[in-house]
Image 1 (cartoon, rainbow, N blue to C red):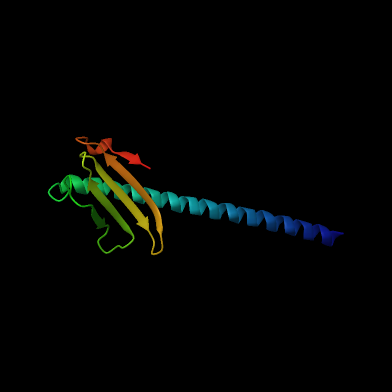
Image 2 (image 1 turned 90 degrees about the horizontal axis):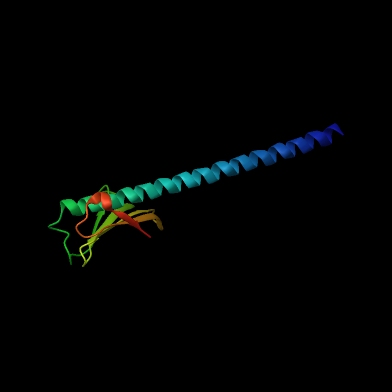
Length: 121
């Protein structure tokens, strides 16, 4: 009888421990994804700032500019373009060597300032 009680308690503790580890893993993945989303947002904001400082390179009708941050990176970059209506669209991207992990697009309406940037889906 005592052996069955010990066995039942051991199984119960094992299940509780596995459940706890599962919750930790889910929380870790969520935190990592949120970190990537924030990095993508910051990269998109960097693209808007880049356009503001390089108006000679980025104007209506100019080709989209892609810059890696830092220059040695192949996984973190922004793309910025000025649309025909004068709005500026910047896209920050975080990827690994296989696929895109997170991206964020920001747009600044024509003749608006940087704080007026809004997110696009």
